[in-house]
Length: 80
Image: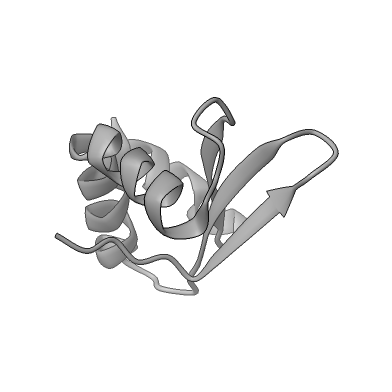
């Protein structure tokens, strides 16, 4: 199985990883599907980061979403 994201940001000082998603979509359908897929497969996704990017297993990984501010309520409803 494959997981994709627009960008990966790594904060070496804080030892954190951010999976970044950027969209200007009005419906946010693809974004909500991606985030739901990540949630459903989170343990496997974390293992893939350790395996493929050599991220230490104990580093926190957090989704980081960049969307137009007027779409924030819509995303919250879709992910509820």
